[in-house]
Length: 60
Image (cartoon, rainbow, N blue to C red):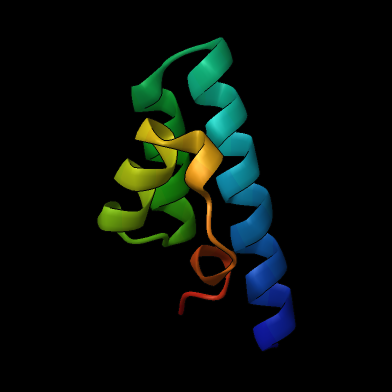
């Protein structure tokens, strides 16, 4: 189950970064919030997309 959650978070983070580049920050943030990614991590990965850490994907 943990591995599945990590994959969901990984996809959400990657998609959120792509969305923020192509559309807008708020849509990306809203999508990641729905998945359950903490606001602190959402803000960091959207403002610093080249600084996505492996630990960001392993949050619970």
